[in-house]
Length: 274
Ligand code: C2E
Ligand code: MG
Ligand code: MG
Ligand code: MG
Image (cartoon, rainbow, N blue to C red; front, side):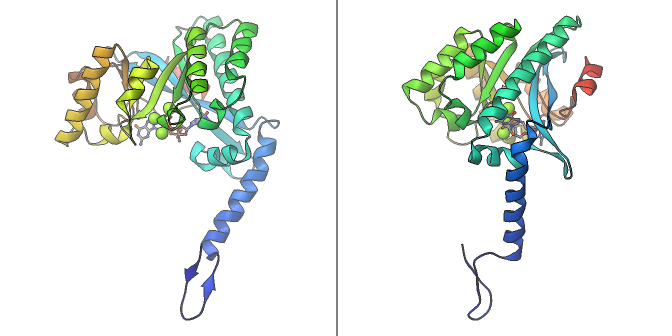
């Protein structure tokens, strides 16, 4: 990358880019200790049943309590974890932590519901992914049905037999598979045919103007109808206002998730919502 500044001056990096690059390097370095220092935390965001508005699920979203920079969000560090390959170990921590949480809630006699986790593409390349999840579930005595894995279509683009086998393997454990951010990117309908998802999550870009933009409403309505036909649960993400919620209820969307109900919160905050 070069940037021309005035006559004959070429900068490989602008000061701004240098600062960004050195911040990334530092985070990359710190990331190696984050797991052993126990710096990751899962926040939970409720999904509510559209009819009753009762909590029917939760999405686990990773946060990094950085010792000096404070709380960091996935967009700040997941790409770094992917570059270094650490994402596989972090991903393992995520599903184990989520399962342990389900178990705690169950043991505490709370009404329980499934917990969804997010998987990145690289994690899906892990050779023995299904076997490792299977033995973890087995050891900890947690049924697969309480776990849902949210994947995005960037994973599906690989479109090979190994991937199909992994998804089928997870389903055999009872783990549910959701297609996240649907409607964003290419969203091939062929994926719906091939993978038989239990849930589709409508991307927040559609929900954003569903109450003000006829096209967004029509597309959403079409996807919900398609979901019904295929017996797939439809979740709308990014629901921020009452008008959006009303519209989605009218379209018979199954579940709603978004700041209108709650932002993602710590375990103790989440328990107050229950
Ligand atoms: P996602 O899975 O699509 O998660 C939804 C994101 O939207 C979350 O951001 C959530 O906080 C945010 N959100 C929820 N409700 C609303 C709303 O009403 N309005 C708006 N504007 N945003 C809302 P977050 O937590 O920053 O996560 C961003 C992305 O990072 C996630 O997108 C997911 O792809 C990824 N991610 C999160 N946790 C993990 C993880 O444990 N592992 C991996 N591999 N990726 C993760
Ligand atoms: Mg998600
Ligand atoms: Mg999403
Ligand atoms: Mg997303």
